[in-house]
Length: 222
Image (cartoon, helix red, strand yellow):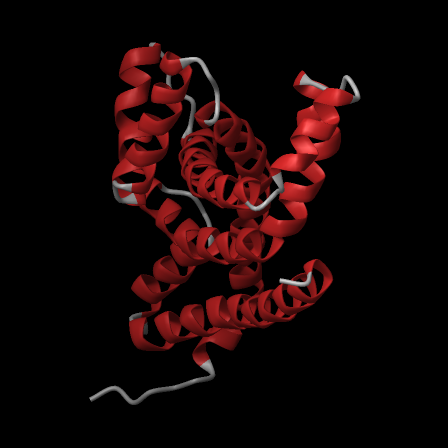
């Protein structure tokens, strides 16, 4: 029986770091795009135009109510049939994770927007601040401040969900770790190392979320 050797992953630390960088880079890209998409979607769900509001609601419920892996497979395998060309695994991963991030951050922004006092909207309208200026310079800064803790939690969730991109051949941390385990016949050591790396990145972020949330609550005097 093969014994557990914790030193095995250290022989491939450079390859694992390359995979980790791919996971982090993809997470940052999709998070930035997802935050922008989520804010626009939250505004669309508050729109007076019923078709726009219905479409935004359908999008959010669809991507929140279906597994991310299914979304990734559909975009990677089915979307090329509709577009007539293959966007590639990186583009497919970015699209899938961005749409997912946009859906969950939309709910984050919707909750934070509700916490903004109605009097501020009335004051802005009285001063002639409406439309895009109201959204960008008054609503967005306050919504971001209130949403920061949840957005950071969404970032942690997105980082963990990014492990799914290995299913479409992306050379992320999970893909490289699995490839090494298959080649070396050391799945226990490699999968344990992958779990430790994900935990080492995600756990400090969750602690930061708690501290930031406490500071924001004190600042807002909630």
